[in-house]
Image: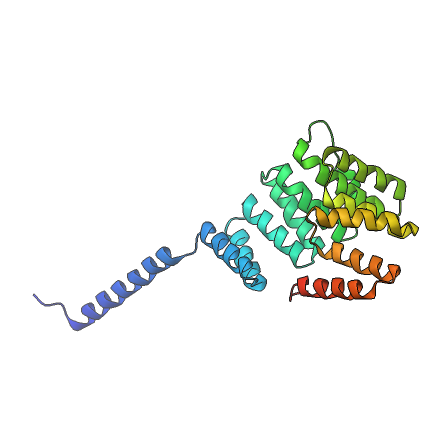
Length: 236
């Protein structure tokens, strides 16, 4: 017996609705999809798109330590120290390893100008993994440098170098200290050692430009500034 047309129409509508619901289930992005998309966008330099994906990720899984970590580190790249702090602390709260989070958290504190908080929360002890200690000592040195406590800054940089002789970020810190005191010879020695050790950062190029200018080597200063501008991301 044939169904009346009205029932056939209802059946078609029901089937279509069911297909839509199933499709939504199939194509609903998982946490892993959001994170993979974010990594892909970030690798391409599409940071705004990566940010959207990571915000979707933490909305879907608020307790995901990995999503919070990635979001915090992306905020660091975007120059948003406060947002980076919040996300990295949430990553810790949700179980991320301290050894993974602390260096980025320290940079977030420095970016936001909160050196006191860095010195309070990021310390080096016998329990700190040895391979992490040079980086943490250097971050503490940078915090003391910002606080204009130069003796303490030098001590922290030297602590880092005692563990890793050619640690470039600590050498750069000592170059900064020497430059600030007017000791251009020591500043050049430390900066060259840092560059030889593979330093290739915005901070390094800034110090190179300032030191070369004060040495009267304007050609090198201009080259350093050009390299600096080439390294500055488009989003800043």
